[in-house]
Image (cartoon, rainbow, N blue to C red; front, side, top):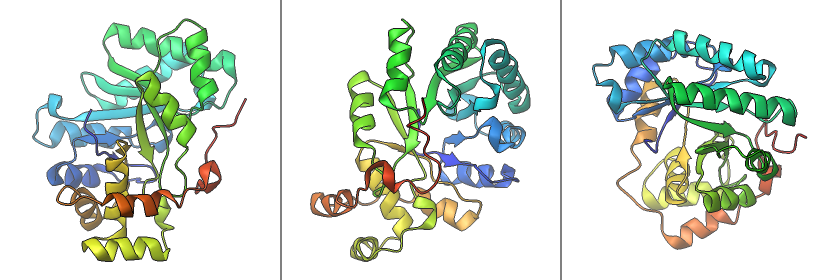
Length: 259
């Protein structure tokens, strides 16, 4: 899985953004049924000029559609909208719905994976106990857990658990929805001659996360990919780590505590 991905949430016309991102070096596009732009993502992947195997496409099923038969149907709709031979990663978008429907949904995704329409399956916004219920049901664990991760919201217990289980941690909202007006960010960015978004993405990469910055502006999409020519020092990483507010630092929706 390519580490850096383009998030396309709230990008209602993401076709040009996807093409810009692929040209800038991104090889991973993160979409979802809820985003209502799977068709545009698929079109960009088909028309970008790169072999399909060089690109990684993610989509997700939202909680109102959970359930075994409903998940099979919704997955097939995503598959058709994307118009690709296969989906690289399909995920449960959140744990909202209750244990029974979560597990039914997970079993349906395993079925579609075994059929070859999707290569890997994962979850998003899952806390430790939500992953444990999969394990206790005797089912295989997700390969990915996508959660909100940035210096204000580091969710360290979930990250540690996922690493122990070999689950990749994807970081959505790595740019804190632009709410990074803090002198520490400004100081670190100035020290390296980089923008604050570049510092935040680099921080995520150095922690071993897979960050998914989103933007619809060509310049920012390219800027967010220019993060491989510097390293943040251990001292500056420690400064950024010290900003953690736990899950209380989430900038919007963080449903990790649902039953």
